[in-house]
Length: 166
Image (cartoon, rainbow, N blue to C red; front, side):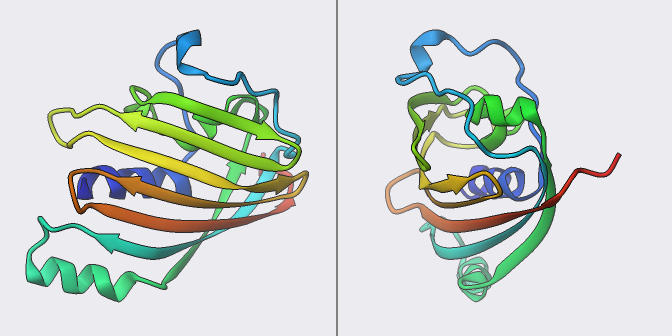
């Protein structure tokens, strides 16, 4: 899970997303209407709240423990395409194989649940995302789970700064 969690965290913090193929309709429990988040440049503050992974060595676990409570800030251009498809907003192209079990963006509330299959580099895992949004900010709490005992919790607070650079 540590590689999947790191990849997911990096994409959530930094990356715009590209979808490999059309998402089967069966993967969207509640087809979301475009969220009323304004496209533009957002400043995201991501804080690691918890990280447990029994497979880590003592040295790796100590390094991970030092990151708990740490906040990383990054600017991210959120496009209209990303807003119209929550999966594009949340996942990198490498994670597009994840199945969306729940996708609700309604009345300023976010409630998502995904399951991601194992691949050659990572084990299977799940992600839940809950939070709130309005036209120029969003705040989410994420929980990533993998093998027994593997958990990563993060929060992301983002505020729109203006238009994306041209």
